[in-house]
Image 1: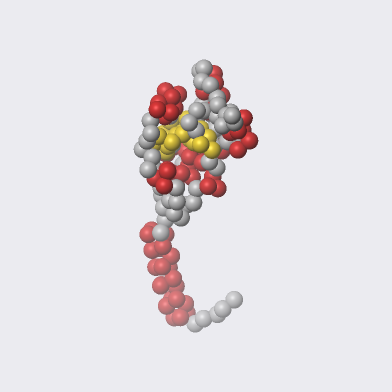
Image 2: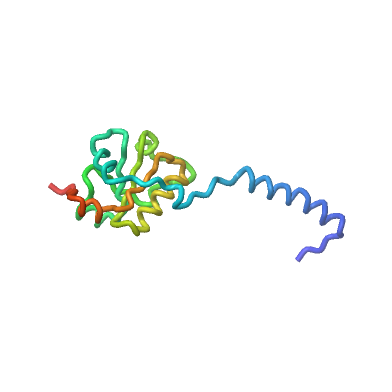
Length: 146
């Protein structure tokens, strides 16, 4: 531990405290939470296949995606989204991003959607029903295998 005379402690504490406060105010991004996620409905997911400005993202594991996914979806995971730079031109160009998982409680879908919002992809919504709701309402799943 470093011992300084009282007047030197005040001289150090003032600038240090000011720097800490400034970095807290200027350098912080807004926190995102599940309340920030707008829900997408099954009809919007149906429209996504015909809309070139919408990207449908399956947040499940690659093996689950390969077994069957909503037509037109791409597989993406949370590690593919860089928070420091929005490095996905396809996502930047999208008018709307819809993320889905297996079911309403799928943490992969919620986590990925939140990560996209945090990274600045503001057009992100979540289809909470996921694959389970999609198939229950008569939607087909596709594979990329021939």
